[in-house]
Length: 338
Image 1: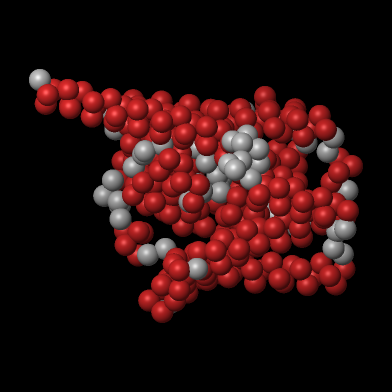
Image 2 (image 1 turned 90 degrees about the vertical axis):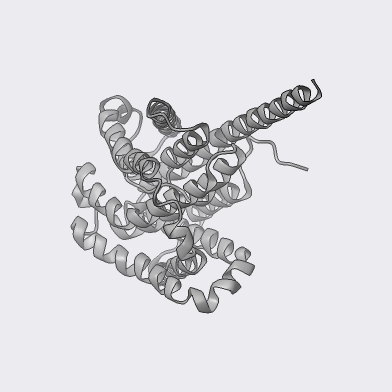
């Protein structure tokens, strides 16, 4: 039986369970140190497997469609940060300063890969372009995100070091394993392709580990004493406003620039979404451990909101395209009979 579209998926439920576990049984002392090492290993393994999974053909494919990719990258790394800064006087009163730091952080993140491609496919968009654009966003985000964080997050005391020092840490922890996976793809690529469930397990497991460690630290610092239900409601409103403006802006720009329907869909889904899988590991590297829990909370909520909204849009647009194709076939058949 299919899950109703507005109910959270199993992974979102697992995230909620992990936050609950960290709230009730946070790790401390030597246990926290052990978990911290474990998360570093899991994140390195995650990016290694992603490197082994992504073919070089997929990296190069669609690169000639530069106008589409440029619009997506500008939306991801320019429009979002500008929206985060411009909306600060309006939205920051709804949340705490630490939570708005998390909103600014999610504005700097790359686009998702898997869900952007999946929604583009459901809506009958340009899937090859989505693969190339989302992959490029994910790779470039390793360098662009920490630099943007240094520009848009005013309280640099929450960061573990300078932006360029952070870039070095991210390159070491994320890009080096990715490149190693790419180099070993001729050896292990087919095994990875046959065992996608392993990658999904590592993907989701590493995120859950980071969330548990981050929220354990946050609970130890008293996060739930500083965040009320009204503040959480304000955070939901802030995320909805941000996503709505991003969806409208990408749709408006794609149409005004004369892109085809398929390309417009790709721009909307790739240009309006933010990556939980990339964001949580990056937050662990960029921000001090005592602030990571509050920083990733806006991203976790934004992730669920974007999945629910984009699922509805993808299903609706896909159904319209299917109906239009059937109508065209019927008209063509009628013309042949005449």
